[in-house]
Length: 277
Image (cartoon, rainbow, N blue to C red):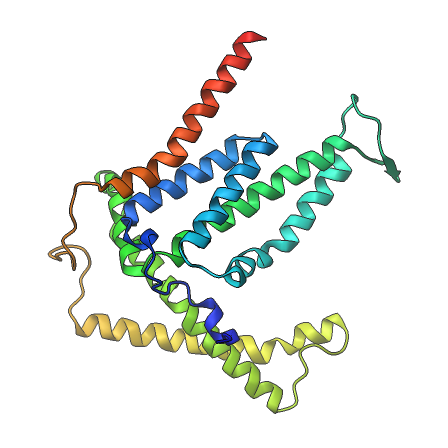
């Protein structure tokens, strides 16, 4: 069944895949190491291999191609600006410029650097989208609190920060639904959001943004009232909702081991190559 636009921002939906049985802590560690790999490794073959692996995991988790594209489209402007920046401002004396744009020289090195950076950005966006779409918000909050628990010894309010992140994550689908309702109501009143000059289009956004801002403040006030009514005072004295097995399963070890082994193999190959020069 075709999904409505309001439902596209729903981040997590249970799809009964084996990915969902992996602990949130393991998926967070996997995400961090994959991000580190994408930042450190610059060889095109390795980067394309990692990108392909992320896509395979995406489909293994029974996520749709449409959601994959929707996670990348919002950063399309970043892709374009990154490519233009590298094409125009990267110079290499070993390659003859393909053609000149004023005082700028477009070279093969600039094209390769721009493509590599776009692959990096796409991979990082996809891996974080994979994390939030395959992990329930409450489980993700538990994993984040476990991951950053050592910071509690330094006085960092980890529980409060994770709570704010979880609330913000849960508010996204609600605000998206409210946005579409208000947009349809304003269109029914004759507002044209895709007509006229750029300045007129920007001004026409005010009837959308102001009601959204008011709705956000009202919902935040209602949430605060509900938390006070339930005597919420922070982490002190609270017990976990679910008692989790502290021992990692073989799936957890497998999903964490993939990026770790990949990073170790790359570092060994890189060190051998540097030593041989």
